[in-house]
Length: 205
Image 1 (cartoon, rainbow, N blue to C red):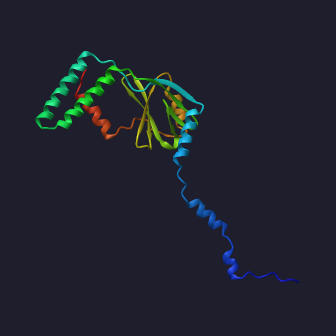
Image 2: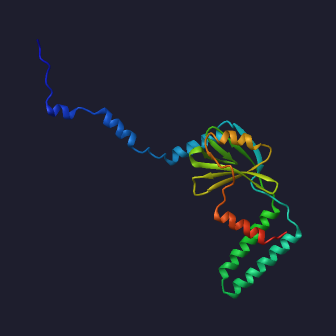
């Protein structure tokens, strides 16, 4: 009767250890996608079939009165005189730039763009945001305008603010809640609170 061959210690050491190797593979972090791979994903998201879609202005627009422009010019003049008095000439340029932006936002009606929710993420205008790039969302209201606010993981934009026109909030909620965390109340940063307090104190209307 043939005796089974004994494996020497050297052969045993050379034998693979699948369990340990598979564990090591699981512990390895996934390779981050390359720029080309990300661009391909964003392009696919742009072309994906929408689950929900609607059109709305790219920003809130409110027709301003003559009183608004007069007050804005008066505040700007005071700030410019203060800047000149303290020899802060760079600040004068910043004030002129802000006044120009305020004038543009108050006189030029915003472009109407399409927003889409797909199985890959959110598309707003001509830009796609993948689910991996988005963190959470909530609903807000400014005057008569209803807003969908989406927090992102990106440096810019850190938030998407989409005007809701004909679409209802429940439809948005049912689709986004599958992928993103939902806050039942608006999330305000320190800057948001500061801006709101400043707007209440300085009424230009």
